[in-house]
Length: 612
Ligand code: HEM
Ligand SMILES: *[C@@H]1O[C@H](CO)[C@@H](O)[C@H](O)[C@H]1NC(C)=O
Ligand SMILES: *[C@@H]1O[C@H](CO)[C@@H](O)[C@H](O)[C@H]1NC(C)=O
Ligand SMILES: *[C@@H]1O[C@H](CO)[C@@H](O)[C@H](O)[C@H]1NC(C)=O
Ligand SMILES: *[C@@H]1O[C@H](CO)[C@@H](O)[C@H](O)[C@H]1NC(C)=O
Image (cartoon, rainbow, N blue to C red; front, side):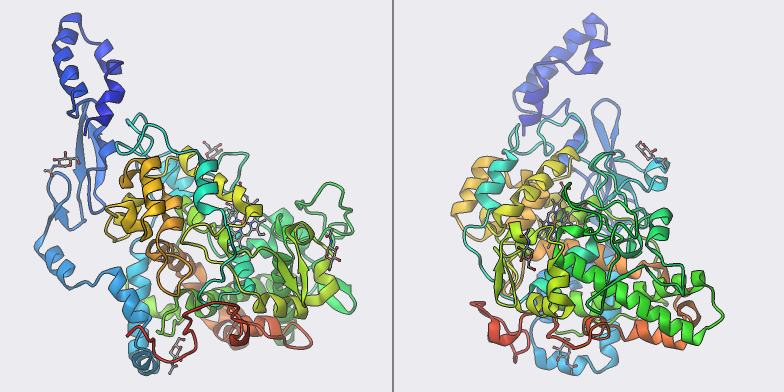
């Protein structure tokens, strides 16, 4: 593998210039050898030599050491398994087998759901997934080694894998071409949607906007500081998208009466206040008057009626919970009512995300359970730090359709984006019903992104280069999967694979986001295996790592007593909507069976899979 050396050979290594002339001459043959194909002067960590989560440290001028401590492996590259590791590896089924079992044999799961085995498996899912996330966090985009700065400066997103070392022979380390394919070209060729295809799960726009709304409380890249930074310092489910990401903004949004948030009433319905009433910075087209701008916790939520819809639902829910709390605690201050309502809403969010959202996404027949007590007997750190990799992988713009259909009326992107009148014109019920009935696109599998949002994908690819994300295959290994051996194996076909091979030169040089989106999707799924195996650990760690899930917090008094605790424990998407509207619409994360619109192979609510 001499690619690296060829890169270095023309210019002698910096260190050589410092050597006496005689020694430099001595070095010359070595460099010649190197140019002829052996590795000599490259930072050896560019080869990612350390396996099984061993830590690569460069030593001396061109040596390295793998720190294999507690990996269960030893040897120069942490490749020799210890006895117990060998045994465990033998017994442990691959992610693919796990996934197969969890998405088949419905009859078996119908039995398991009703027994203690459900708890045991749920605990297993939570611990196995969470254990893949370093906690406390480790690297960030500026620090590829442990440092106090990376730990303490929460303005950074964290990183599970350190950046590609500086000065490697190729952009991805040592594999692949000297130059990565043009990002715009990659996006147009492999990511741009040609023709809309309904996703095979029946996932709808209600799900898509939930995903976007929920994740934008912790994905708030702080472009002004740089792509590796975040504005959301809570690093998790803190409902900053409802209450603002700082105290000043929160205070502007609060009514300071009965713990409630400011609101406006239009046609007898409650909506978020205008920016005139709650003067917070919102992103809107420049000409839009303040009276038409809605003020919300997240500054970008004016972008889409789907985001304003969820902002409205959660605002109504907050004020509804305040009324209930006030009834039980008439002596409580505004502050205590507000703070307690916020904790209740955080709990409701986590409940809905696990039991409605992740349940839908996973396609598992195991009935998922939000019960923090499952983890009280095991080692678990109640903390979380949002990672760059999690942000990258959550760019699910393929979900977006080609147009938006509200009560039979079709709207283009131009009409839909920043449309501030649509929500109040149709009302919450109509939007919920329409979004619940419109099917979303697929995320993975290639050519799934509408032209209107393609530039976001280009941005993701550019960001991953700027932040020097390691190759897709390194992430596959880090999250317990086998690296792909070829582009054919990745895409499951020949044509695109050949083009990719031509562009990247080597499967081990394929980029993270491109790999995630071009991997062949699992049957009946929105995306491939890697999205699940890498995304689920971040997701579950973020949900259960919340302080309200800790033994100190998880008790009735935290939520104002038994009533508040019960609200958390029984929350659902349906209740979020139906307790906050006059007439309950069709509300779900999947389209009703009658409007499957060409989706094939669904057995979401059906009998046992025919694949058996
Ligand atoms: C029509 C709908 C949508 C539009 C117009 C849109 C547009 C955008 C834009 C302009 C950005 C900023 C890119 C940048 O920082 O350079 C962005 C970021 C992002 N989008 Fe979307 N998006 C849409 C739907 C979605 C959906 C459904 C999801 C689902 C999860 C999603 C997930 C994300 C994520 C995770 C980010 C990164 C946010 C950050 O780091 O600050 N988007 N989107
Ligand atoms: C360790 O990895 C390096 C780089 O991939 C390789 O050249 C070397 O042969 C490996 N050493 C052992 C003992 O496996
Ligand atoms: C975090 O790091 C950035 C970049 O070095 C710096 O500008 C910022 O002030 C740091 N934040 C804190 C709180 O130290
Ligand atoms: C078990 O859970 C799955 C997923 O929620 C569901 O499809 C199935 O009907 C459940 N069975 C029982 C008996 O609860
Ligand atoms: C916003 O949506 C309404 C329907 O509620 C539509 O009549 C109007 O044309 C849209 N606005 C723009 C600027 O397209």
